[in-house]
Length: 384
Image (cartoon, rainbow, N blue to C red; front, side, top):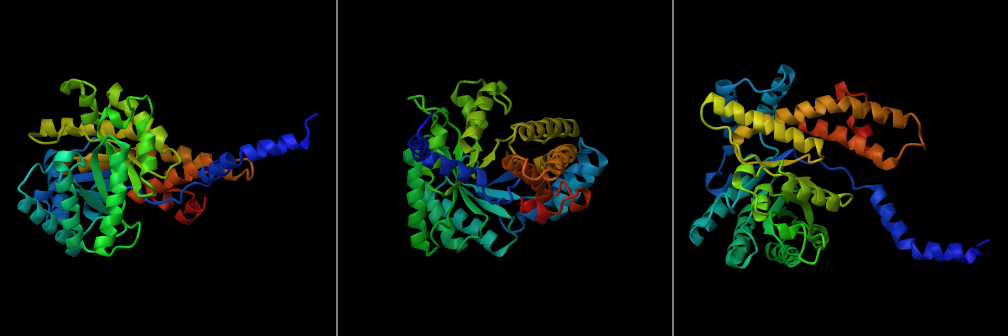
């Protein structure tokens, strides 16, 4: 028989592992995640733009409808467009804005920040700067600096999106920059957070065979709150022809699966990319684009990506409609499984119970579900 010292030695060797597993099993506190990020080029954003987007999209639906959903879902979509047309806004100073004169970009940074400061601001917002690669590094830093100077202390939903991240050192530099900006602008420590936009093969797998994306998250040192997958750029980076470089391509799907594993249990929000088929033109073209986008939204949700990028406001109806349909269809099963687990206290796996509760909370947060349609209220779900 083993001596007691053998048990003690195993406990000592695995103490750090036990602590890490307990930390992960305890789960991160639930916070709302937006279902999308709407990217708006900096030169197109100003006071009242988001409200105008809601009105324009309503007109698009009236002119080119019907939307490809059931009547109950369409009613919810129209209500959402009136009430909260944009959940997450990203003012784009990167590819959507392009290269401008320094004075022009400075002015755009001030103008957009002032518009957010004095006007309606969505629950989540921020800016996408240019990359920290050599040619655009100084301009990226300058834009963030000017933007914060005009904005003042940002609200809790503020985040900076860092594009084209390939190396751990770029993330480490962003962590350093956030600390410097907090000091320069008199902001509380750790108040600036950022998202990593994965757009290059090197951000997924390094030349040494190591999964770079996991190292990027660790290098974020608590400031990285999101991982956004730039699927079109990634597909191009591995040589996929433009005609076939869509969200569902095997190459980008593999990369996103690796990223999904890397963020599991890390409290990092994961976001899919955007549809390249835009709802513009005549009614046939708009409806075709809506069908494509609704299918992509559904595919992402089924694979556990609860957020995605939208590059045109006319994609908002199918973003919301696809999301609402998904939750309407999946919520009954989730609620039933949660009820069964809670009816057998002490036997249910806590992580699964928590995941079911958070799934239902996601549906409530975006407006897909109502407490009246569930046997659980928000407070009971948040307590699990």
